[in-house]
Structures are given as structure tokens and as C-alpha cells.
Image 1: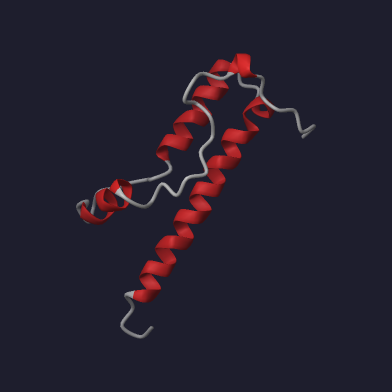
Image 2: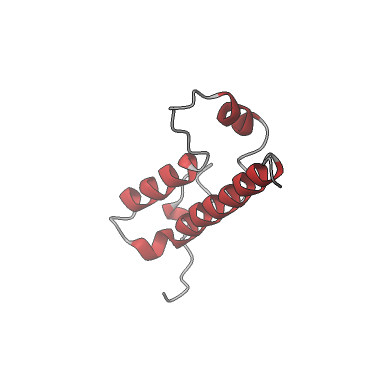
Length: 93
């Protein structure tokens, strides 16, 4: 990677990577109240932004590296939060 930053011409308003904790508030409530068999990914918005960026830039992954990193960060933080929640609710913990 050469460290190039996406230009503002290739970005759309509201399409910037977010590092917010997406698994709190309404997102956490939706996850906790979903049916047991229902799949829910709080990082889906970040994934969608990555795909839109690829489509916008003709598949140039380097132009979308910020979006990919935001998705990886979201997944890492969400996984850590879920592990912590399971640890706190453990019978043995």
C-alpha cells in the first residue's frame, strides 16, 4: 500500500468511515432482542460502505483502504465487546 488517501471527489456525503461504537444504543438493543436464530451484524453498514466505495472507484482497493480498516476495526471492537459480555454473564466467571 502506498498510503494514498481517497480524494473528496470519490466520496459521497455521509460515506466516510466511522469509528463509532456501533454496538451500543439502538444497535445493541436490536442485537439483544433478535430471535435466537436470526443473524445480525452491527458492522453491516461499514461493509456496505466498503462495497459502494469499490463500485464507485472501479474496484480499486487502494482507494477504499479507509473503509476496509473501519470495517475491520468495527468487527474487532464488536467481537471484543461480545466476549466481555459473555464473560460477565458466565456462571463460572
